[in-house]
Length: 181
Image (tube, rainbow, N blue to C red):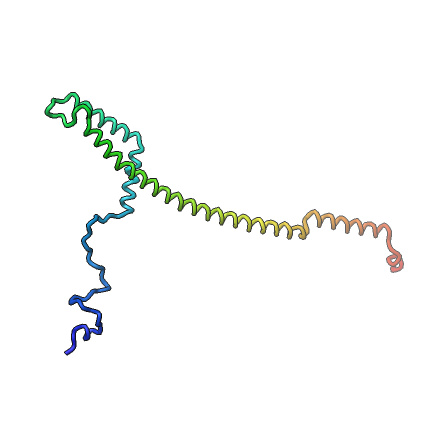
């Protein structure tokens, strides 16, 4: 009797369940969370954009003032941060420790976009220069060609010369013209 692997023609297949190559694999469990780098980059740009506004400074100032006022003037049992405001310092340090990398990430993404735009501008400039050089050569060829074309003034001067020559012949008929008459 033949084994199942021999029957299917695959001697390397040792598992009981056959792997299907036409279907995506099931997701494996991972120790680290999976995230979309593009979505995270967009989020970091929004946060960095907000941190760079006057609105953020106003809100941050308002929160700090309320924090200090509450922890100075509130009843003692409702205060969560006493005078040296160690918890406030910790919160501001935490905010700064997250803000700095997000701002750097947003700047890196902007640098990448600027690099791509600069490359596209450089290629566009090269095409414009090539087009300008081509048109310059064409205009030069047209000018050279026009130098050999009869202009209206040149034709007018040729006609005037012919008319003058004909008038001269009438005034001074040649000998052969007198003998014919």
